[in-house]
Image (cartoon, protein in one colour):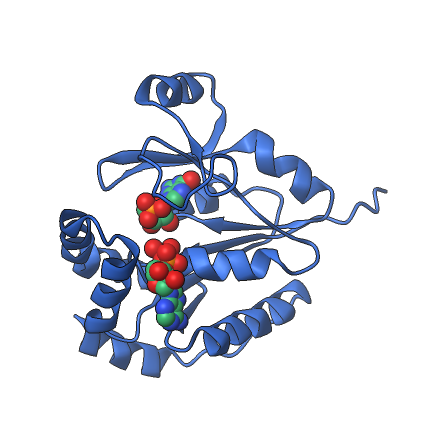
Length: 209
Ligand code: ADP
Ligand code: 5GP
């Protein structure tokens, strides 16, 4: 019998700007946690680096990777394609590393449907309010008001998907949110459910939409 230790797939999704990328970066600093780097056809932001934040690729290149069946999942989000290459993550999981994914709800559904031989933990991140979300998006995408508007317009639709996730966490204070996620993962990686107050999340969502 193989005694190979296998890693877990940890998926973070949220409406744009709620803080997934920031949280994934913090988690990836933990021992044995590896952040999956996606491919995208979107243009890099001024602070983004090739191979660190994304593998930036044109539409033709992305299409070729789809045809070659290179993606574990892929989706069109805000008019651009985003996808997770199998190559980058399956080896890590087989080596026993936990892989963290910053992907949208469509990619999450595709991964769940695949019923792979790895544990999957899904976490949906919420902003404290729409006002704070807009401030965060505006600070990040300073030069482009249209991007902020496009992402705010999508908010009410994106947020509906929280129900399909194992856990929902509000990212108000970053440290506090990070600690909640670490607590969830510590339980889940020891095959225990963590507690999560669904009623207070439902109330928070009623206030948000
Ligand atoms: P997402 O990946 O969900 O789109 P980001 O991680 O890029 O969101 O965060 C959007 C912006 O908000 C970034 O500028 C980030 O530094 C900032 N941010 C994230 N979490 C917090 C927080 N808890 N408090 C204040 N600013 C935050
Ligand atoms: P951004 O342009 O802000 O980096 O990302 C936009 C959205 O695309 C976010 O919701 C992010 O989670 C999602 N995303 C990033 N990479 C992937 C991916 O590989 N697959 C899928 N399905 N979504 C992704």
